[in-house]
Amino acid sequence: MTSWIFLRGLTREARHWGDFAGQFQQAWPDQAVVTLDLAGNGLLNHRTSACRVEDMVADCRQQLAMRDIEPPHHLLAMSLGAMVAVAWAQLHPKEIAAQVLINTSMRPFNPFYQRLLPANYVALLRLILTGAAPPVWERAILQMTSNRGDESVLPQWVRLRRANPVLGLNALRQLLAAARFHAPVDSPVTPTLLLAGAQDHLVSVACSRALARQWQCALRVHPDAGHDIPLDDGPWVARQVREWFLA
Image (tube, rainbow, N blue to C red; front, side):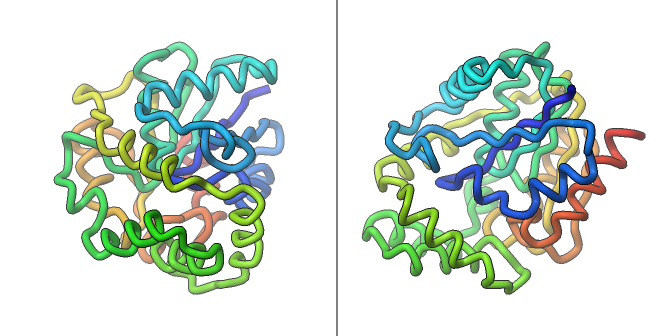
């Protein structure tokens, strides 16, 4: 059975995929969906986050090995998780059959102010450094990442943060890993699909456009979704992946 490995972004965890994991599974009923947490997040919040994306790759591989999930894998990853996917495909190309990267940004293709839009700098630092209460933190994240305006996810997100809070130091370590990661200039040998939200207010859509030009890979842009496209329009993501994969 083919496995799709899902990787979330900065300080987020596997359960933040919410309804999307089921939506994707419906589109691919004959394939397994496996959601992983990066160290420091979710059920692994007791662990220290890596400062290097390459070390995150090693940890993900170890998690899958412990669960007897063997390659080749298909990766679907967002933001920081997409950097992990790219590094994984670069370091172990035979293990990755395909990768779908959602709203990611990577050096050296875009300046820092596109990789994290300036309107978010103060808000993110305040959340990390002041230890904001879970409702305050999650409402701010929703406003930064979603354009749907649906707050029905907030109670679940707040419960997750209270149950498995991400330490401020781990959040900073993840930020450092994302900031220092340098993507390969050459096109990846792994088949790659880029998905981006035209109205992403966290990371500029210009980042995905630059990657698509540099790597000469497929790009699909949602006209009004934000950073968390699986939340804003999960069926669209599942449809784009299926159409691309089966083309």
